[in-house]
Image (cartoon, rainbow, N blue to C red; front, side):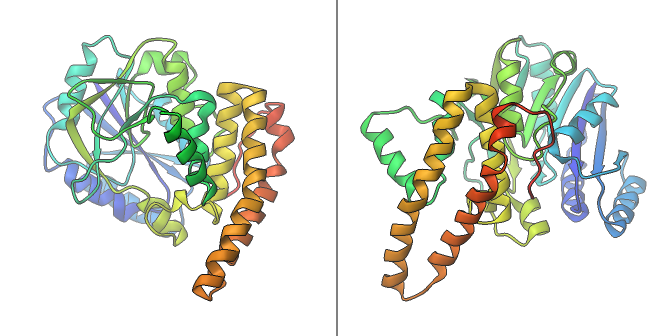
Amino acid sequence: MLSIIIVHYNCSTIIKDLLDSFFQFPLSISCEIIIVDNASTIYEKGKLLTLENEYKIRIIWNSENAGFGRANNLGAQNATGDILLFLNPDCLIKDQSIELCFIRFRSSEYVACGVSLLYKDGSAQNSGHHFFTWGLNHLLHIPYYGNFLKRIALQLNAKRPSIDNPGSLQEVDWISGAFLMVKKETFLQLNGFDSDFFLYSEEIELCSRLLTKGKLVIYGDLEIVHLEGIVIGSDSAYEKMAYYNLSNSVGKQVIISNLLLIRKMYGITAYCFHILNYLFSIPFLLFFSVLKSIKLRSITELKLFNRYFLNIGSVLYYFIPILLRKRKLYKVI
């Protein structure tokens, strides 16, 4: 049986779109849909109750906004299926890909799998990834400084870790959390998602542990649409792909979660190296922000720099707890 687990936080309209698309392509397999509500507003809970009456779904009510990983763990604990699908609410089903993925995966040797993710216009997203030395690819989204690091990587002929056009069968190191199918027995053996993560990077950390149990794969010929960033954008008034903007509050959460991941996966040396790079990026970013502000005769870039600088200052508050691997929910958004 397949258990589909969806985390909900003030996004009932988006989930309705997902459910509408899902029921356009009824499954012939045994399936349940579990929605875990992360302490949404009363209004949103009411809309969710309407969906419960309209569709055959189960709702689990969380008493707090515990983040993506903890909510999914709660859904998994209440699931009856032997296969779990962690599905983002900002996805749209376009054909029978979920059923076909389940049938292939259930009888396979793999411990986790994903499918090709598409933008709404049909272009490819990054669906699967390979690990990169010390997780240095997480530094590439730093404004200006990331471009500098990317040029160095290109000069060194570094292999691109992301896979946005997988073949029909592509083995990977980690799979996007937008669509992550796992075998429940293995997931529970590993105690599920790490409860220290609030949002972002939790699926990477989970996949690093899943690899100790077996192989991970992308079924590249199966596809779903992922409206990347729309849930965060709708709730926080940020544009699509907002989590690549490290100057806002979402960006601060991205940095914290990335550093937590680096500490857990690669150790103290890699963690300190990443911290130093964030510190080195400050004068680098200031220089280019001043140049661009003079060129454009606008202080917009300096405002963005100031927000980024404040974010890095906030991140340093968590330097020691992460270094010492203190168990807690690292929530800053």
